[in-house]
Image 1 (spheres, rainbow, N blue to C red):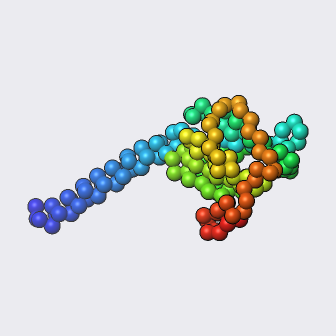
Image 2 (cartoon, rainbow, N blue to C red):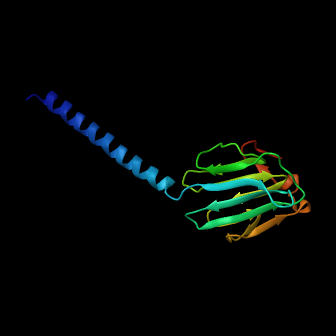
Image 3 (cartoon, rainbow, N blue to C red):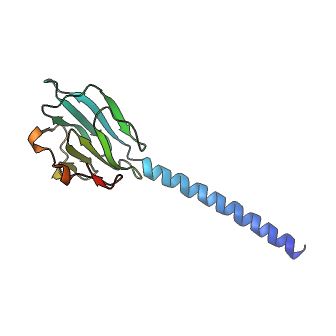
Length: 159
């Protein structure tokens, strides 16, 4: 057997091993990224007709966390599972999302209120709140952030 035959054989074996290891690590990484599942947010209204969102995250044992926007009304409703970037939402706007490892981080602007969903805590208008299943947070019109306190990193400007 010539040395060029040995070299090509070794290169083919190395290539097959590299592809196999890559496929194995990629599939394991995908499982780790998605194992906890997404945020599930219901966009709806309360009994008084005020816009609200209801947040659930099964793996973190977060359920029925209600955020009510007092004196604000919306006309579009629905449920969104944030398992992929750039999903449209019925009302408000998405300011930031990092869904590399689910449930990830989501930041929204709802009627001038900033709402951030993080696995360890909830932020409402830049104030940390604990995750308490079944709790209702009421956001008053006068608690909105001033425009200079809100920053959109995608546009590199304040809104």
